[in-house]
Image (cartoon, rainbow, N blue to C red; front, side, top):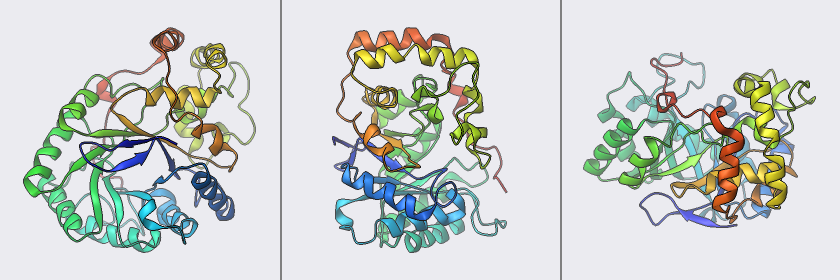
Length: 334
């Protein structure tokens, strides 16, 4: 495993982060989820990402149980706040001071830890003054409940404004967690340049485009049984944008590129996002422990310029690049 600094800080994270969105507490049984976490640890992953909203808090509980007994100082545990939790009442969501302060306490209890290494604003909250949100984060850092603060899916302008406030309030905003893959490149035009300017790293989610870049979905063929595309608990909805024959055909063109590079298709996808110097870590998930080793092999891989060009040629106009696609809900979700 290789490690990278997160933003303009002395804090290092593993190039591969294990994330439990869409799986733990919902799609897979708790004992299998624990096996996945143990496999991640055995593979050298030290960084774990979750959120209170995943499986309505159950994912945090599963992760806390799975990490019990590990040396806390050797781990980097991330969680997030914004989405609706609990009974989803009027203050059970968003980035108000009330919701943030109550959420951090709930997350720490479920994760069975005194602090998280990184606490992230899961989206931008248009219904709460940014000053209120950042002041709450500053207080959480001073209380020792979070060591660093990050955000997720913020635009370049939102990052600049949040970063300026964090400096005024005496803490560091060091990361952004956007979707990023060969097929979803919307951060490249604006978010990445702004982040480089500010000293903010990307921790990217869905580097395999919901599994499409694994190559297992074939044009004109039904989705494999048990795959994310057949999951009616949320997976199918997330992946549907890529389930077009033109996209699936383009992905098949990546197979010889991966083979010549000595990589599996998932490894090529994860290695590709890690070629971006502004990316500190790629989040991977697993519904089976054996999936972990394949993803971890992407750490430390260097793709030569001619390989990157062949990938661009294969994907071409299929990739989404519109920076306006970096969005947060205009109103809270409940």
